Each structure stands twice: as C-alpha cells, then as structure tokens.
Length: 125
Image (cartoon, rainbow, N blue to C red):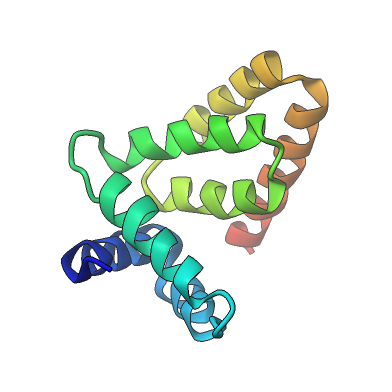
C-alpha cells in the first residue's frame, strides 16, 4: 500500500462521505475485507478523488451517472449525499436525474428520484 496515497484518499473520502460513514466502514473491516477497504481508499479516493484535475462537483456528477447506469442504488444513495456535500444544488441534482432517466432508462430514473426525495427529506428534517 502507498501510505501517502491512502492518506490522501482517506482525507478525500472523509470530506465527501463524512467522518462517521468512513470510520464505520473502516472499523467494520475484518481480515476478509480489510484489504478491499484499503484498496478503495487508496485508489478510488486517493488516486481518483485526490487528483485535482476535476473538482468534487464534477466527480459527483460523473459518479451519479455511472453508478445509476450500473443500477447500484445503495452506492448511488451514498454518492447522492456526497454530491450534496460537494455543493450540487437541487436544480443541478434534478438536471442530473433527468439525464439519468433519459440515458439509463425510466425505471432507473424512478428509483433515483425515489432515493433523492428520501435523502432530501431526511436532510430537511
């Protein structure tokens, strides 16, 4: 493991997903999945998110589209929350959801809107 890349990834992951989420994920790691958590932190978050070529909003836009296309709704919800943390407005999020619906299909769009409304309601409460 590249310790510097891991630390950069840990900082990026925490800034987008929140300290509680990241600490819980790392604390829950065991002998079976610890290397996976390290790999995700080092490469997804250190290499990709730690690269300043794209800003956090741009990365959130990309992730929402790609994860929706893969129909991975648990991860989509995590990254929808992260997109809000990264400063995407409700108007921008709605536009992303419209584009997801057109390019990925109405059933995926329905599910993304359902999750988005749930998250937004939780944040307003």
